[in-house]
Amino acid sequence: MLAWTIANQKGGVGKTTTTVALAGLCAEQGKRVLLLDLDPHGSLSSYFKHEPDQVVNSTFTLFQKRKELSIDLVRECIVETGYQNIGLIPSSMALATLERQAISQDGMGLVISRALAAIKGEFDIVLIDCPPLLGILMINALAACQQLLIPVQTEFLALKGLERMTQTLDMMSKSRKHPLQYSIVPTMFDRRTQASVVSLRSIRNNYESNVWPGKIPVDTKLRDASKAGVPPHLFQPDSRAVDAYRSLLKWQLSRRASMRPVEASADGVVS
Image (cartoon, rainbow, N blue to C red; front, side, top):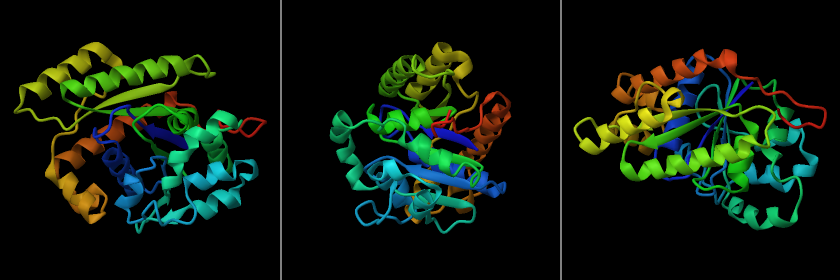
């Protein structure tokens, strides 16, 4: 089972859209996909009409009952999205309280790793959407994945968020057995604006081999698909953005040979 985290320490760069787009394309290929929403705002959950202030079981449940994590508990948290091969563990607004709890409680950093270890044979790929700040939720998401995707809007202010994100990765790599592989995904590219063109050039010059060779263009069909609650490839199969996401998925999967699958160690932690 592959686990990919979609993260950036800046909001509004296309994390949730990227998560949904890749999930839909993976499902189209017949892969069993699980989505995890670790953002208290719950944009991913809301996309599929599950409101964070109304759900019964959620990603918060995994933290709340972390001492009794089991395959049955994780299964109870999975809800339907209305789309074949795509399951979701929705967000809860209660996730916002975890930072205070984490200060005084042990074992909070590996909850998602242990949850994925419990269901490792049930899905082919897990996509984790997390909030745009470094805290216990992002730490969980990074600890649980083999590959990180960093969507970066092609504009100047977004480059600062990318810089903070790579600094976080450098810090976390010291506590991992294996360095975390990451791919930078340029998003919201508008070739008509100098800001987009210059920012894209800067991203590619500064991060070189870690940057996906393509880019996700500005496309109003993505916004329309989100409003309708439909994965982009089903809403407008031939849109420019969907074509770009297909290219991104193909590129990501081509790197699979160098990724380590999720495996549970003796203590139940995903490595």
